[in-house]
Image 1 (spheres, rainbow, N blue to C red):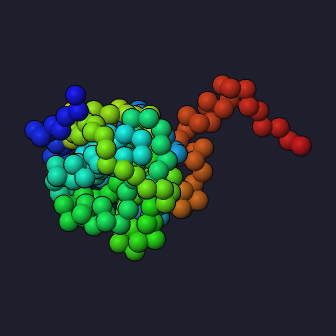
Image 2 (image 1 turned 180 degrees about the horizontal axis):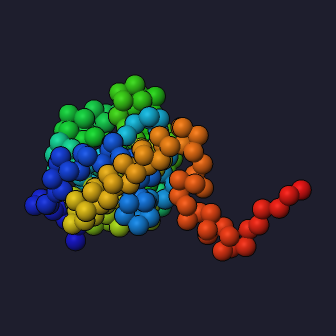
Amino acid sequence: MARVNTNVVRTERSLAAAFAELGVATVHEAQGRSGLLHHRLTPRNPGAAVSGTALTCEVPPGDNWMIHVALEQAQPGDILVVSPTSPCDDGYFGDLLATSATARGIQGLIIDAGVRDIRILRAMNFPVWSKTISAHGTVKETVADVQAPLVCAGQLIHPGDVIVADDDGVCVVGRASASTVLEAAQARADAEEHKRRLYASGRLSLDVSPHLRSDLERKGLHYVSA
């Protein structure tokens, strides 16, 4: 039986929003190189960087009815995460749905399928990460789950989890671990900024991170005069 869960507990909004500045690569590394959605999801608005809470939506192949249902459940700060129950590349989402999503406070779309009206979506500055672009339309015939756990581009996503998306891809952070991961990601970003200043001054990474030289020696690398 298809269902819409209306009592979802979301990650606190300001906590979820804090991930955007840190970015996908840093967050992915900070949580043990986990949570990265498959790279088939391509950013359609280069330069966009968002983070927010997952509003999950299953869709049957070639049927976008449940996206309309999902928008009813939207809260400001959500990111719509859509995954078909079977692989499909049809254009599930276009400018009209983006207009409604924007009015509901949705920050962007993650969809393991197709979108259309891409020129208008870009003009609207509505961030999209999708598997394909396709003008092929959809119907409204079959129901599926909204605000239930789903697998999108290889990752299990629960409603209310944190979604982070930018030009590097898309990453999910579980609601229960969001505070810990944010702290680790910020620490990593601070350490990288320190290294960046040293690199800019001419220091070599091999000397900034001394273990790199000792590890090279241990692996059998020798410097010889030619």
